[in-house]
Length: 222
Image (cartoon, rainbow, N blue to C red; front, side):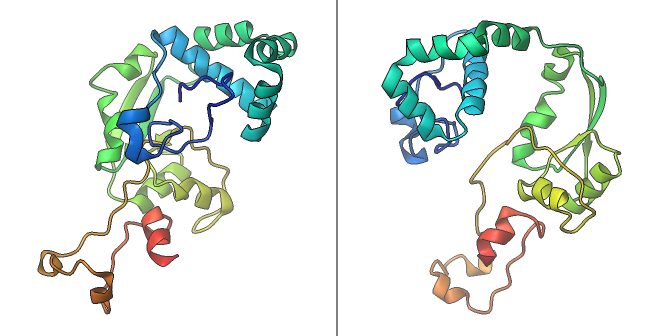
């Protein structure tokens, strides 16, 4: 997330869950240093967003930087879109268009940021009065979101895509502004099958999935 977009060696696409270029297995050894200070970190975010817009294909950005160098690239881009102004605008932010929000969640580990942001004061820090609502299931999350009972909701990653496409519901454009975690799926067996480690022994088993529009379902089926 905080990678230097003016570094030709830096890949802006994710490989590790931390956002680094390295494989997840090498996270502790090769993780890139995070800039010191909140302002420096958010400046990186703004710069990366600008360069992604200018170079939708990351290979083009890297080739451009290798050809002209970081300083020349920054000067050229700043002449068209002043990065300093973009950083300042991001830092200043603006008043929230809606302060009283209701956010639905399913009580599982990846909902932790949504839940804990309330008692830790992150919502109030940004002028938001948020009610986090424990919800019974993914279908209920989807239906309450579509009915506008929730302003935001914790969802499985394929759900916004399915909603936008109208798969399982009427098509409604949906935005996914944040990913809470990745690669957290697992196949779990009943205790009576704990010694059956070889999938060859699973013939005839029934596997449950949390929702039709979930990575769990797609990974098992495809």
